[in-house]
Length: 123
Length: 107
Image (cartoon, rainbow over all chains, first blue to last red; front, side, top):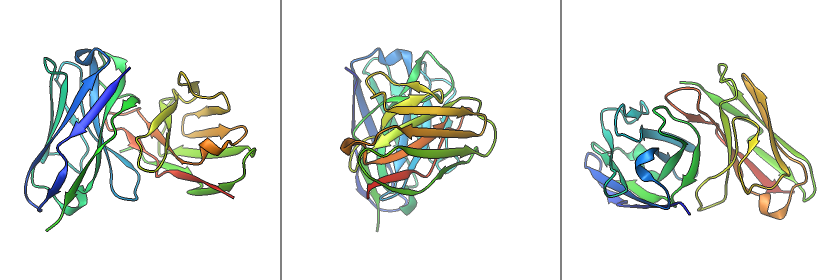
């Protein structure tokens, strides 16, 4: 069965950086696009970024563009999110999620999710 | 970005009730809409995709309909396990967006 396990969250100060990881198993990781979706405390879901199966043409929400970088290592079945210049409004649980469509270059719906990792940006 | 608006924001219902949640898109998204269920402290769970296709393993009391800009999620007979928050999500653009959520509470 598909398993996605996020790690790397924590408490950081505004302006600093953090890298999240998502270890994937149970499916052919290199064949699917992967996303990061976040949820601020008590709030709704916000899509953050997509990386297609082959790592090309990455897409970002306007709220993180230029500060966050999504990447993947298909040899290690791992997804990453490098977060720079963190702000208080980036405080959220960050979920990695698997795109539903094989070898797609555009986003679709998310058919598997990790349990999330909490990032708190506070001075 | 395409804006997704759900109504109501909160819904109070009893076990056995028929429940309907509406999701409206700010522009046509064809049938590129998914519904998710989320319980406190848990990841969202996919219920329906392409507006009306039930994800494998999801009970048949859940159904979805609509196209263009207006969509509905219906629970035909609410069960105790269904008390949760529900989100719609469009995937018609390169920037997927979610509705703000509908919390289904016990009446």
